[in-house]
Length: 246
Image (tube, rainbow, N blue to C red; front, side, top):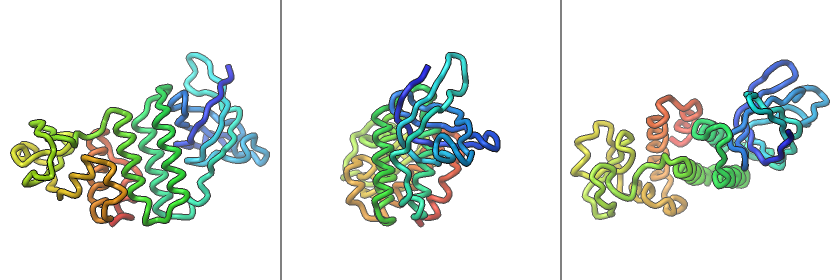
């Protein structure tokens, strides 16, 4: 049965000398694993090998019980040519692909997250390197929120005391899943002392675009630590992100 959808390629694996196994994050079908037969042939039906974070219209066939659908058409409307020319933007796009793969399940659609991912890639494409970090942070917030994994930052994650800029001290704990007040911080050995500016960005994502770069670097470090904690494994692309924002 043939199906049409829009998808972003988030993972590629060479299957043979001529074919690829691909993972797409799609608008209506969620994460989808497909085989693209003949994708690497000189006269490929897809115009050549399918590239990571390319996005566009796709047609695939699937049968009940099959682990892999068969990709029959892929017409990219987004290639990310400019992203590939910028080191930080490129690594952010690869990081986003890894996160989408880790946080989504097969055939579990998140159309709002698909739209967020497209907007993020478009922002990477059209922005200078110094404007990319806030967009990366906003993308992570959106993904964590959509998948029910967003840290609790409107109150103390332990005692539920409502967040206020008047707190005398601010902490973030991955094991607590969010912000922690001074009265509760001693319980969490992994807590990090943070500034009121960092706490405010975690509490209200609208402040991200106006935040200083030093604040954004601290927020991104916390997010990567938090994501690593909840997925219980290292993120393959995170070390380069951390290196490039230092």
